[in-house]
Image (spheres, rainbow, N blue to C red):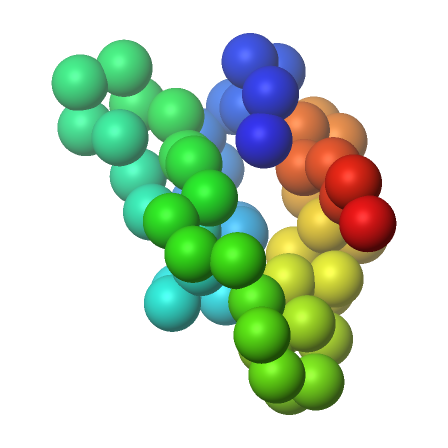
Length: 59
């Protein structure tokens, strides 16, 4: 997650166990890395759906 986040909360909706909203600066952040195939799919869906392209994948 980078600073281009526009706080749309789409990632929080797609993968709520992995993305949280930082209330102080109104940006989302990665709360927990995905571990299972299902969690990975949810996070990949959030990544591909992000309108600001703020979510990255380092591996």
